[in-house]
Image (tube, rainbow, N blue to C red):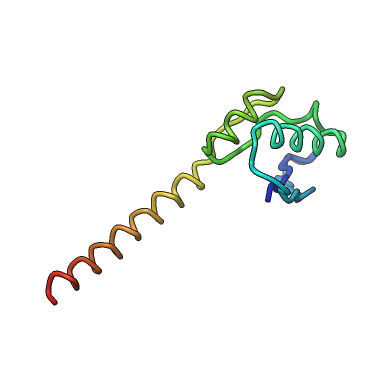
Length: 104
């Protein structure tokens, strides 16, 4: 699933946000397909000229899709942090399993 959430400042400089669209992938996550979905969503909402940056994960397909588009993309720090935490938890699980198998 590809979600599209807009963040902006209103006239009083108060942060606003709205989840404007979600697109379900019907096939593989091909670069051209992702790029066309992003461009279609931006065009449908008439905001293509207002987009300053697209925050994305660091999957090679997402990086390339945005690089191939007219948009600027940046990796999402929170997503990278979540992946690091998940990996560290997996290491702990593996170590516990390894300790149990060694003692049996």
